[in-house]
Length: 44
Image (cartoon, rainbow, N blue to C red; front, side, top):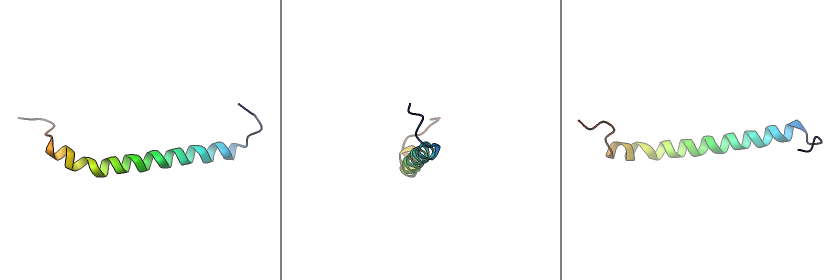
């Protein structure tokens, strides 16, 4: 790793990654309920 890189760059990259993962999780959860409702978790 190059020590010349500013810490702000790493923070920016990490922040972008967190935002992307958060958006993906929200999108998955937004589409998950209908699929989950079709498939019963605990069939009795």
